[in-house]
Amino acid sequence: MDESRPRVAVWCEGEEWCPLTSTATLIGKKWHCVIIHRLLVNGPLGFNALKEEVDGISSKVLSDALDDLEEKQLVNREIVNEKPVRVEYSLTDLGESLESIVMEMRDWGLEYLEPASDKDSSIA
Image 1 (cartoon, rainbow, N blue to C red):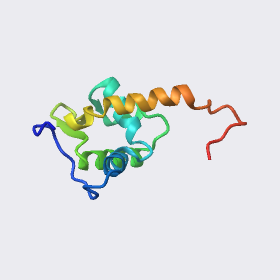
Image 2 (cartoon, one colour; image 1 turned 120 degrees about the horizontal axis):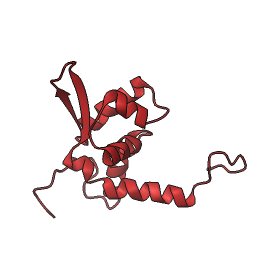
Image 3 (cartoon, rainbow, N blue to C red; image 1 turned 45 degrees about the vertical axis):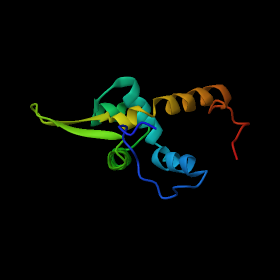
């Protein structure tokens, strides 16, 4: 194990299922993976640009999700001293380390999920 890598505290240390539960807790909220994906694909984005990239999210929900991702050390919030002053969001090293997981989730969804327009299918 590389000790120089950023580490995340867990509540279930020693349990065999702990890594799965802890990772799901970090990225398991509805919009977290989408935000991480958009920042992986586009690089750093301002709030409004990120809101445009995450179609269907309200400003309040995006703000709350970004606060949560920042608290979990996955997203960095930087104030850019330009006129006008703006905020830019980017992934931390820890957030970038989720790239393979997020891309695999996207790929799995593309392969196995029915299109939303298919009224006959539902996931229980």
